[in-house]
Image 1 (cartoon, rainbow over the protein chains, first blue to last red):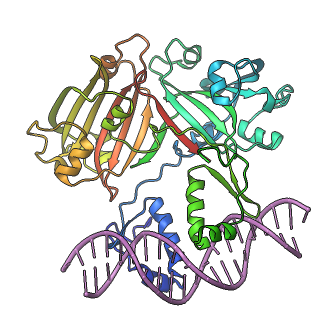
Image 2 (cartoon, rainbow over the protein chains, first blue to last red):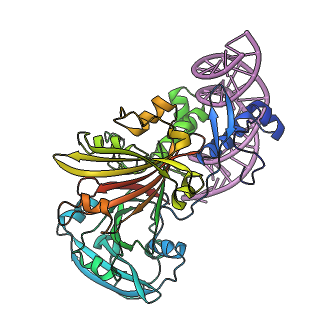
Image 3 (tube, rainbow over the protein chains, first blue to last red):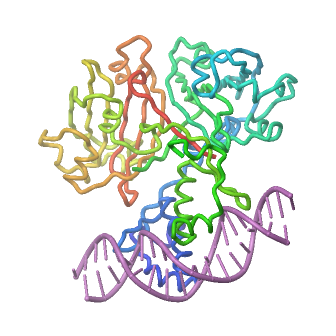
Amino acid sequence: MDRGLLPPGYRFPSEPEMAAKFGVSRETFRAAVKKLEEEGKIRVQHGVGTFVIRQLDHVPSNLNRLQSTSEMLRAAGLQESDRHQTVRHGECTEEWAAYLNLKAGDPVVILERGRMADGEPVMTSVYILPKSIAGRSFDSAAFSGSLFQFLEHELGITIRKSHTEIKVPPASDPYVKSLAVHPDTGVLLMQQTHYDENNFPVFYAYDYFRNDVFRFWIDRMR
Amino acid sequence: MDRGLLPPGYRFPSEPEMAAKFGVSRETFRAAVKKLEEEGKIRVQHGVGTFVIRQLDHVPSNLNRLQSTSEMLRAAGLQESDRHQTVRHGECTEEWAAYLNLKAGDPVVILERGRMADGEPVMTSVYILPKSIAGRSFDSAAFSGSLFQFLEHELGITIRKSHTEIKVPPASDPYVKSLAVHPDTGVLLMQQTHYDENNFPVFYAYDYFRNDVFRFWIDRMR
DNA sequence: CAGTGGTCTAGACCACCGC
DNA sequence: CGGTGGTCTAGACCACTGC
């Protein structure tokens, strides 16, 4: 289908027929059919048949899959380079408490990172981690690269999911000001709660992206 | 699990055992397990077991599923009311041509709609439809309500998918100006190509949302 | 009514994990 | 090595569609 050998509109032989042709059981063949249907390559109609539909271009760097910001930078073709990085300790606000399953006032570690490309700032992240998770891991400044990878290798925590709110931050936001280096540079804000494999919140993040450098896509279905 | 009767960390009996308990075959039981796993309610570990994980709040109005703007308005608790609506005919631009599988200069129908709530504008949409699809359906001004429903009932076209780019539009954009009624109102732009069940592009849309009225969420997994 | 996909079964064997 | 989930099978019957 990708090579155009099976044109859009092509109708497959029936499932028992195809299963026999491949020498597998019908259930096994149907598992493959289901995958292709989920990928949006074929359309299956009960009582009618299975058809090839128009193949859409694949957009690899979209929002449907969770990526670390390091991975997003790489996908955008940018060299990863920190502009600055600060670590400080603070108290959990009401807002963070709601997302991180904490109480207001609980100790948190606040990590701030700016990234550059071609001598210009392109994004800024502020990470909020419960002190109970972060411990003293960030006290020695040996940390660099992906936070996802750091959590996985140093603390054995795997990030599996995120819940992301997409916003236009107010122009008065200082992070916006530091990124809006050109007059018409839009800045997009993602406020994200990140969860491990048990759905426990691990950290909350404010990610500011220059929209002239990063483009964001979603594929949506009804 | 939703009622908390099975707490996070609870381990299910083995699959053959559970299948027997429900009086179904193991494959059938596994189909149910797979659904719960996709919903993010349980975690299945090969060779280990199946466990209840922490239940997340369900956010009904998110970007993971495709909705018509009418549905989004309803989800935001707003009464649907058009501010204005105009239909005009035009020629396809290079940009639209790429998304709509047309050639530049092909005839298109351009539909513009503004929506109000509590006496204020809250969103604006500009829809681009190929004349070959729209025909003369929009000439008589009898059209109101959801464009999705209109296409389905009048033309027999079902919108199944969309490919959405999320942007911060420049402040100079006239649609932004008309929506930015308060000093710190952010405006989010979604540029969307909508496809039918055969993946054929049906229309292209510019949807401008006031971000103080609409909030946008995505759940993402690795 | 014939032909298609949708579902379910009982059983077998494999792959992985922890002890 | 024992117990878990992952995969596959051959066959049966049901549900939907179009003629």
